[in-house]
Amino acid sequence: MLLENPVLKVKNLVVRYGGGCPLCNDNLEKNRCTLCKTIWAANDISFELYPGEVLGIVGESGSGKTTLMRSLYFDFIPTSGTAILRDYNSGNIWEASPAKQRMIKNNLMGMVYQNPVMGLRMSHSAASNIAEKLISAGNRNAGEMTERGAELLEAVEILTSRMKDAPKHFSGGMQQRVQIAKALAMYPALLLLDEVTTGLDLSVQAKVLDLIRSIKSRFGISILLVSHDLAVIRMLADRTIVMLDGKIVESGLTDQILEDPQHPYTQQLVHSLI
Image (cartoon, rainbow, N blue to C red; front, side, top):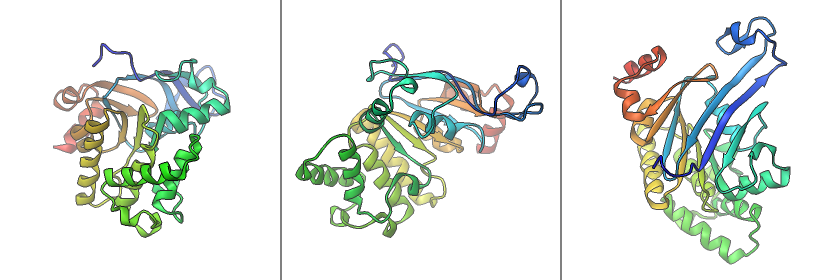
């Protein structure tokens, strides 16, 4: 796996709120400079994601996990850093024009947010939500969109008889599955999953996790999986990054991280799992 060209390569990502000062790195209290009050939401983040791989990102709230994901999906542009997407041949995606960023977002990536309200139009039908992604990517064929919507809803185990139902009438687990279906609409190279099981009942969590595992097997897609829950990471991730206060404090094969954690914070996480 690791001999192949990465699907995604992120280097030196910084997301900073405030101007910063020359003494920031020596005066950080968690991720906030005690002198200039700048917040470093992501602080020099670098990693690679390979074809067919699930890369887990774990850490407590405020560690920078969601900041990283939303930067990749152009919800905001970072302060500095580069992100190279294998299927985009024009360099750093954060330096692309707005039109090209929309193309990348609509054609090459899929995003599933922790809160389905951010990823779905809750009053529109499930099929319409999927069609929105297809239309954004340039599809104008109603028959093709209906067929693709039915195919995707079936893939995420939602009855096609409910295609015209709005997500607001679905359970939380079903809403997440509609989000996943929408994210897969354009056969993306990269699927971004941000805390997709948080707030779901355990039985529903298990179904969503089984679905993600099935999607990986069926589509061979590369997945960036954010969670605060090491049990989720253990089940799905090939490799894992551990984040704390905006920085990567440990990374490696998931089994190695879980069996022989090196950083005190990772040790604390693993201990809490036992």
